[in-house]
Every structure is written in C-alpha cells, then in structure tokens.
Length: 566
Image (cartoon, rainbow, N blue to C red; front, side, top):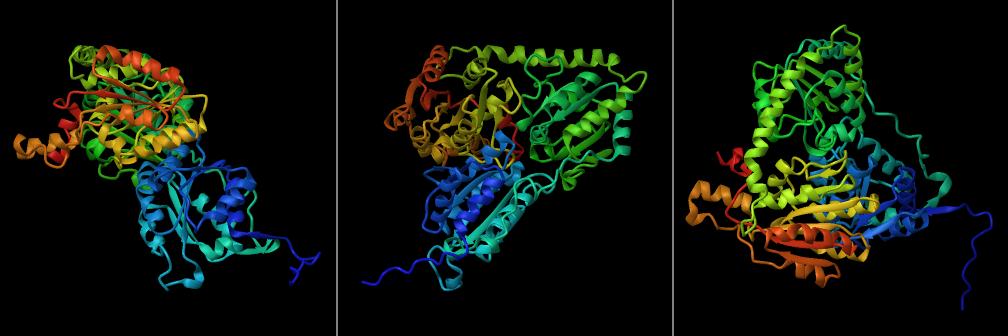
C-alpha cells in the first residue's frame, strides 16, 4: 500500500474559496446566512461553521433572499443569502428584485458551474450575472480563488453606493473548492474597506429649507423608509417638535412617532397634501404610492430629500431637492431655523388643530366597522384587534393584498423599525421570511405577521423552518378564499359574472396546517374570539397561525381606488 505523502513542514498555509467567503462575511459583521443547499456551495457552509456564522436552511430560495432583505431592515447591517446555481439562483430573483425596489442592502451569492466547464453545458449553468444586473447595484463573477474575499467585500461596498440595495456574486464551483496560499489571497480587514456614506447635504440648500420652514403657515412632512434606513428617528422627532410640523409616515418610516403623539397624523394625509403650503418628502420616491407626485398640491412648495440623486424630482417638478442622509439634513434644517427670532412654530397651532379635526372625523366614521360584530368578520374588525394587541416590542409585518391594505389604515406600530412590508414591488410571500429574519435578529421582540391567504400560500411551507429553528411568531391569516384585490378589479372591469376567474382559492384550514408542522393553530369565525386567540398564540411560545375567516365581499378603500383599474 502506498503511504500518503506528508505535507512538507515549510509548506505555505492554504485556504479554500468557501472559507474565504466565510471570512469576508465575518469581516462584514454577518452572523447568519439564509440558504438552500446545493452541491455548488457546500464549501461556504464549511467555512461558516469555522467562522461561527449560523446557517439557516429554508425550503425555497425565494424565502432565503427575502429573509436576507428582512435581516438588513431589522439590523441595519447587510443580509446574506446563499443559493446554488441555475434554478437555485433564479428562484431567488424575486427576493433580490424586492430588495432592489425597497432599497435594502443584501448580498446574494449564487453557485455556478466550474470555470473549467465554461460554456460546455455544465449542470445548472445559466448566465446569472446577465439576469441579475438590472435588479442589483453590482453583479459579478468571481474569477479566481485568490479574489474571493476581495470581491465579496467589494459587493458589500457597492450595496451602499447612494441609496442602499442588493448585490449579486456568482462563484464557480472550482473557484470555491480550490485552495490557495493564504499569503496570495487578499482578505480585507473588518472596518477598513468602507467609508461613511452619511452625506449632510448642500449647506446652502439647507439654509433655504430653513427659510421655507420659518415662513410656512401650513407645512407637513412625509417621513418615508429612508428615515429608518438612516436610523434618523431621533432627528426626525426633534425636527417636527422644534418646528411644530405635522408628520405622516409610510413604509419603514412608520413608527417614527408613536401613536398619540401630537405630531403623529395618519388619516388626513390627502387633505394635508391638498391644503399645505409647504410639503417636505423625505426618503420616498414619487412612484405609484404617491400618484407619481400628482397628489401634491400644485400651489404648494415641494421639497424632496433623498439618498439617491436620481430619485429627486423624478416624475414631478420640485422647488428644492437635497441629496443626503435624512437625519443629518433634518437636524441641520431644524438647527438653522432655530436661530431665527420666530421659527414659525407657534402660529402653526391652528393648522395642527385643523388636521386633527379631519383625522378625528375620519376615525369616527370608520369606528363602527372596526367594532363590528358581523359574521363573516369585517376585515376592519380584524385589523383593529391586531392594532389593539400590539405592544411597544411587537414587530408588525404585512404580507398580502386587500387585507394588508386594510391594515395600512388602522395598524400603528408603537416603536420605530417595527413595521415591515414588501415595499414598492408589492411582492406577496415575504411574510414568513421577514418573520424568520426579525425573530432571529431580535429574539427579544414579539413578531406578528398578517397574511392574506393567497400570500401565505406562496411561501408558507417555511413555517416548518420557523418550527425547526424554534423561532416563535404570531401569524394571522385573513382568509377569504380569494385573491381579493385582483377580484375587485376584475369584477369592476368585466362584471360580476367574470369576477371570479383565476382568483378564487380553496377554503383551506391553515390552523390545521400549522398544527401538522408542530406549531400552534386556531380557527376564528366569531370576531369576539380574535383577541383571545391572539393571546393564546402569544402564550404558546410556538410559531402560530390563527386562521380568521373574513368577509370576501368587502374591499379596502385602497383596493377600490387603485389606478390600474381606472
């Protein structure tokens, strides 16, 4: 028998490509990857074990990508998903696209056939980089093992160019599996390959904003997702209080001000956008959610603050645009205005009272439905019960169409960073993945996710992943056995006789599904049982699904007002 050849005592220390990936992830502060296994990527797992990075394996690659997106939103650090080549990578495309539109920093690493088999038709070979380029800030192939850690770090750096977003890397199998001398591999040091991205804005523009604020009689501000992205909560609160400006919040900006705060407004936004003389839009594009800017008064002075220069003034002319960090800009504007003898705060008392009256009237007109005892359950009653159930430590996630549109009017997170929704791509199926990321990153928080039954069906099998990794959360399914947001549009356009084509689902007992997978499950038909069921789910300490049967023949106002049906 031939004896194995012993490695020479003076042979250089070597490291594999997969272990270089793990070292680069560790340098970025990554403590978990979300993944679905494949032969192309297993050396990354081996490296993660050595570096102390947890591997959470899911049942669908879309979930892995959504979880990386959700992790970034919760932690402020980039998320990471690792998938195999071909269908593994294409399955993750939706999650990457969602992160791209939502400005969420994450890295997707995809496998690829060996370089030695390039263009030979290797297993699962596809042009991943070509497919990912339009929906990422950076997409590349790692050309050699020596460059692995270097290019991983480069991809993370690109996530933060302008407004944040996703990056993609494909790493060929032989690049990952090969080992190279450590001395030949560039391994960037933690904290030494990225600079601060916080830009304070043009000082002259900030002075002009302060001047506009001082002379405004009826200002308002919309605090969008970038307020949370920039971790600008305190600066935003100081701004609205110092200058006595009513604030509206959307996206991840929800929760910046707590419910009941005198400057927190929600139901009077359309009125404010019509009557205000100064409208400040922070970290929100003029996309479909804003009527492409057409919902703002033509006579108002409009100011837009954004991390991305390309977003400012897109779809609607503005009077002042400032590019930079929301917190730094709002803080600087408040400070500049505070130096004036009269910053205008006192004379806005009547304006806030006017808006509060509109707010109160809208709330009172809807309250009977929020308290309705009707069966099937009015969706307003369901979201009202959820809102009353939330605590300051409950992260709320919305994953659905019509049912989540109802919740957007009623549910008010009690703390900043405690609201998650897909973002402007409108992706259904993010809920379980976001809950997974949120509970992993913040085990001290309660996580509650409201699903539409159609949305849950897309990625619901990863409820089992939540059970397997002991990640308890409260799932509520507003079940109307329909894709009701689409159903409304079809009935409105083609008549009731064709309103059920392609949008009707089975009457599924999702509570039984939860129990089958080892979680807690309950069915609710009586609105009086919603709160007790929520309490029992909280006390169960398990992943839970409460299957609430809601009236299929009522629609959210937002559903009925969608411009695509006009």
